[in-house]
Image (cartoon, rainbow, N blue to C red; front, side):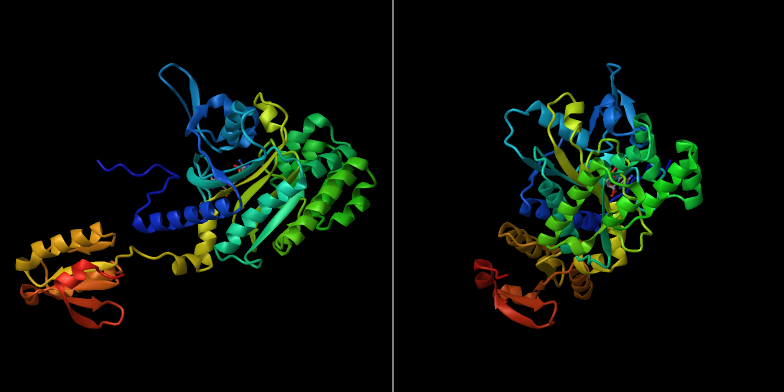
Length: 429
Ligand code: HAM
């Protein structure tokens, strides 16, 4: 009986694994150079951990299970609640601000589609214990630092920035009741993800007042902070949120990455815990789902039983990123196949043992080396050597009896006869 892979999962054969490693190595390198330290947590947690603050969408997508003691558990759909739990546990001993990163494997029972799977990897960077906008700017800078390093330009990607604080104060000012805010966020997050007629219809159903719905539509369509007062009128909370975003813009200009960014009130974020600046990175044409998303969440640690301590961060999945890097031809250029230094070929069976011995010697000396298990013609072995991307091929033939080896440079095709003992005393790279 053949058992297929589970829907929404991936098998990583060596070529896919090479891509995954290239992406994750880049995430880790950029995290470290931006001053983040790595952490990780368990792959499953108590179910209630994700029910507290992640929001309905994530709760509906949980893979949950019961352990033998009847405890309700869930596979992690995100790592931010685990981070909050871990930081709360050692809140007094951890030096602040905490700047941590992680690359967890996550699980969400989403409908599998382009860029969305049921199992994926997600780069997380978070700064905890710092309430200044500078921390938000640093998170955005680090995100752009990676994307730029990977080879994406301002014409490939846009960082779309808004603020939950701004949205909340605007909604309050135009008459939305407090208890409606959370359900409205979930709808507004769909602004660019569903057809505009469906969006407008649902909005009207929720707010039940066409002039309020009109104002919300106008707000969602603004692309400059200065236009807001025209729509909303003067209001101190709105002004404060606008000031904060203006400050964020200045910092990002100073950091040299504002040209990647736009203000976009359509960015709301699906998760329930955000409280301040929020952002998402989208590919330029906006045909794919978000590459990443994040923002400030100043209440989450408190909601998990800790002190009130500010936090801001970002999560980037590997799926949309990989599609984009492939579309831009970046992966083809960057991913090298298996990279061998020496391939040890032998002309016939007589020299097989010598080839195996020599290969192991080279490996022990630190070289990536390989040989052919199958006793085949030299031509076939040379083909194998180039398939394995070997830089040099050593050929063991009759001259081996006279203490000589043939050394072939695979790129130039040049061959030379070398002294075996001399070669073994110091194979050169
Ligand atoms: P999120 O918006 O739920 O935020 O996910 C962030 C990113 O994870 C998405 O933009 C996408 O790249 C990736 N992602 C999410 N779901 C899937 C999926 N089913 N398949 C593939 N990729 C996916 C969070 O998870 C927050 N915890 C991020 C954060 C960290 N905020 C503050 N700190």
